[in-house]
Length: 146
Image (cartoon, rainbow, N blue to C red; front, side):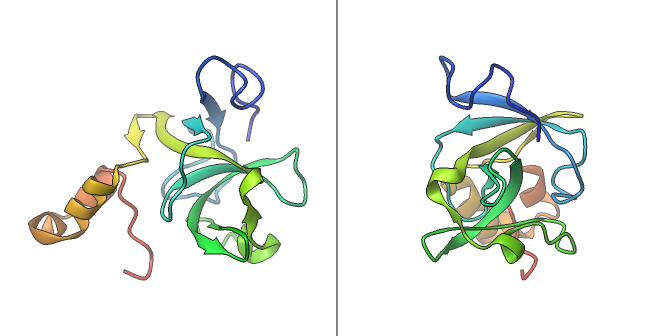
């Protein structure tokens, strides 16, 4: 991950930053070279894509998916499950190392990655759940187990 535009995370007037994605760990959601917008200090919930400091190498920033809370921190996983540079390798990530939530991808093309709870519920239940591909187009995460 590149340092957010504008310097220190959350240090500007607005709690937003732009980050370059490097590597294959978030494929198919994000690819090497994608540019994303992060909201620093945003509330994290399971299913969110987050930016955080690596627990063992804190100058390194990573983007992963929040799977849930475990042992005093967030369990963060790669969308590309064969890539295990995630909590399977370094354990739960303490809250203070989770910098923010990835809201959207702006490059190569815009894609919303942070739907609201009501939209997630609407897309995952009822008649909308039967529309092929709707969840992914709206940024609703379907766990690989579903």
